[in-house]
Amino acid sequence: MFPLCIRYVGEREVAEDILQDGFVTLFTRLDSFKGDGSFEGWARKIFVNTALMYLRKKDALKMSEEIDSARNLSTDMTSQMDDIGYKELMRLITTLPAGFRTVFNMYVVEGYSHKEIAEALGISETTSRTQLSRARTWLQNKIQEMGRK
Image (cartoon, rainbow, N blue to C red; front, top):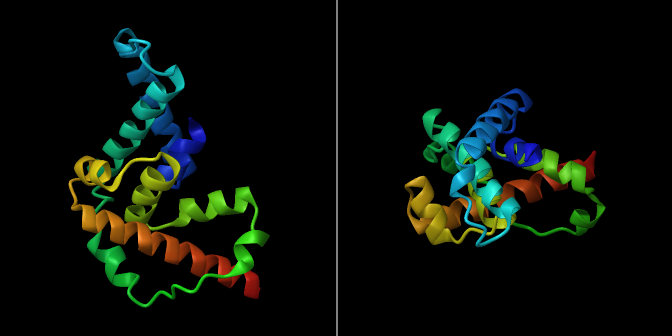
């Protein structure tokens, strides 16, 4: 669950705190696991929600700043994605601006729908789609920059 926490908050120390909080929540709610699905899926949801609660408290989900800073990003696709490794991609994801990172993780990694993301974050579905699109563009640009170095 630690990589999940890092993906959402991007900082190791904060991720450690979220991991600890997540385990406390998991153990205090262990009796609510009904066995309908996998234990891992149930636990994963607890850790995602713990990370989202942290981001809400820190007001990290305010999207306006990131939207403004992403207006000039290129949307060109490159073959450089083939040259990047898993660990480097995960590192890049942790450096996404908080709003981009949250929506990207929820949609791409966790498999939430835009409707579910909108409800969880208190944003519109359009904002969720826009954040995802801009997160992908941001990642593509970072990968392009890496290829030029």
